[in-house]
Image 1 (spheres, rainbow, N blue to C red):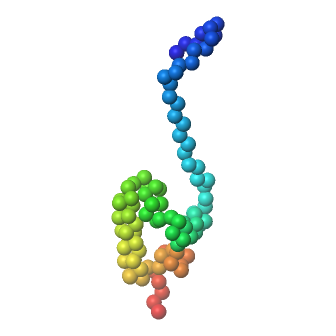
Image 2 (image 1 turned 180 degrees about the horizontal axis):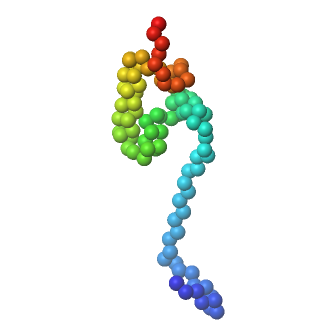
Image 3 (image 1 turned 90 degrees about the vertical axis):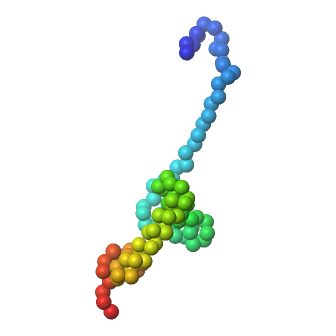
Length: 98
């Protein structure tokens, strides 16, 4: 397009302008983010499945399958004596025999 500055500016009437604002989530350290998520889920304000779907860019159904698979895997590892982080241990490590 060319703008002629010697004549009045002709503003087209058939132009559409769309503005989209993205959500800005300021960076948070992983510890506080996980604590906040646990609180929100515990209060019913958020869903682990919804958070996984948004984080990974997948459908709710696929996110639910992923969460169920992760929980099943955690339970299987705990059954063989592996203590996972967030379950009372600092690092994933074999549990000492009683």
